[in-house]
Length: 227
Image (cartoon, rainbow, N blue to C red; front, side):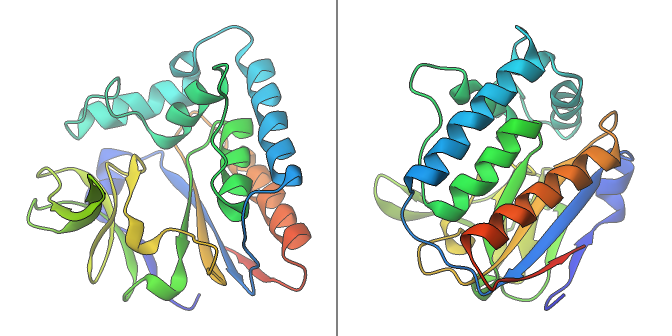
């Protein structure tokens, strides 16, 4: 990897069944959403409906496990849902999934189809290594509120992704900050697929392989490493 990616002992203790697969990609080509990426999102919603078979997203065993972990670090999972559950809820509505940009569409489609939280970060905007830690509460999380930059602080004990500059994603995978998100100028990215028991690790690896194939299809010549 061009940078380190670590999970703290405190997080492992909180969620012993946590696994993540990271896809490092250089030479990406991003741009506005396309008909092809939109079709992938529609297909992901259909795959989700088949997977759930009439259940609500939070009734899926993997989503239930994430709700338990959110509760364990002091978050209310019905109010601040993990990213996969939040996307799944939107996918099942008439409005459907949002179209953001090509790369975000790709990883959102994988997240919904497999019911796995997936995030993407712009490597060129990450300072130092990325760490999954329990927050002290003093860290800065730079976000946008009312169209203007605002600084928040995570709750003490909250699980966050952070780098040397501050928090990049709050409540594990609930809200990403704008500093490191994938934009149409992104050329290097790290994509994180995160799972908890009871989801088999092989299921996460299959989802990662599918995402890697999509990245190669939409960014010909991209260099990909799966960790």
